[in-house]
Structure formats: structure tokens, C-alpha cells
Image 1 (cartoon, one colour):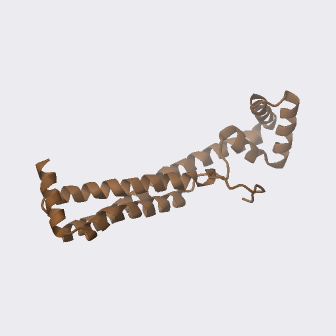
Image 2 (cartoon, rainbow, N blue to C red):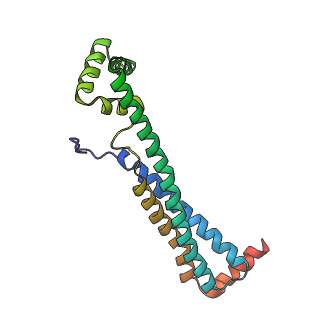
Image 3 (cartoon, rainbow, N blue to C red):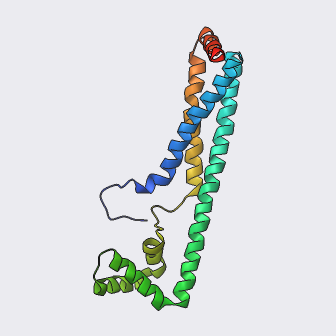
Amino acid sequence: MYSHHSEKHYMSRAGWLRAAVLGANDGIISVTSLITGMAASGASSQTLLIACVAGLISGASSMAAGEYISVKSQVDIENSDLNMEKRELRRNPDAELRELTQIYIMRGLSPELAREVAAQLSAHNALEAHARDEIGIHANTAAKPLQAAGSSALAFSLGALFPMFSILLSPEYLISTSAMIVRVC
């Protein structure tokens, strides 16, 4: 969708950014928790590294699948609402025009101006006007399941790299000392 605005708003990024933040956080916490538990059992650095890679792969896959299903269900709800609105616009366009007019009055327009705005927007694209102003669906914020799934999986993987690098960069004696401390606690 083309925008005439010179400023860059961030709202269009909200869907994938939310998924990425959750994914990165989960990647760090889940994989760190996994290797901490494994380290407490006395596992070697090599075993911890393998567990870390396994945690990264399974966690990223799980996050992507969960995010896809979650956002896809949002798309299904949006489509259901749009189909309902299409039917109502076809069956009773006058009632839908009054409904849109009332929305604009509630937003602060005078009744005359609200009716004019509703009429003009309905003449241009009634479904788009109702989707945006009645239902709250806008092209910039519409759910995108693949984008959310990809950003979640990528962010989980990047988050999981932190505990992985800590294993790779830590000397063996520190890992075994940490394991003993965890077992004592």
C-alpha cells in the first residue's frame, strides 16, 4: 500500500516485532534452562553443545509453528468478519451507511459531516471503510502468519546463540564448576 506520508510509522511492524521479541526472549531463557539442567547432571561441554543445538532447532520450530497457527487464526477471524460485513453491505446498505455515520459522529464529527464522510467513503469502497472504522482491520496492521512465524523462529535462534556461545567460549573447568554449584542449589 502506497503512503503519501513522509514520516515512517512503526505500527506496521507491530506483528512481526512482537513475535521477534517473544522469540528472542524464549530462545535465551529456554535454551539456557535446558543446558543449565543438563550441566547439573554433569554433562560434558560437547553434550551441552549438542543439547543447545537440539534446543535451538526444536524451539525455533515450535515457536514458528505456534506463531503461525496463532496469527493464522487471527486471519481467519478477520476474513470471517469481512465476509459478514460483505453480506450486510449487500443485504442492507442503508443500515450499514447509518452505522458508519454513527461511528463518525461518535468520533466527533457533526451528523451532517459524518453522513457525508460515510457516503463518500462508502461510494469509494464501502467494505474498506467498514473494515477499518467498524471492525478495526487495516492493511498496515493486518495479520501476516508467515512473517510472524519467520520472525519468531529467527529471533528464537538468535536468542539461543547466547547460551551456545557461552558454552563454546567457556573453559571446561568453569562449566563443571557451574554444574557443581547448580547441583548444590
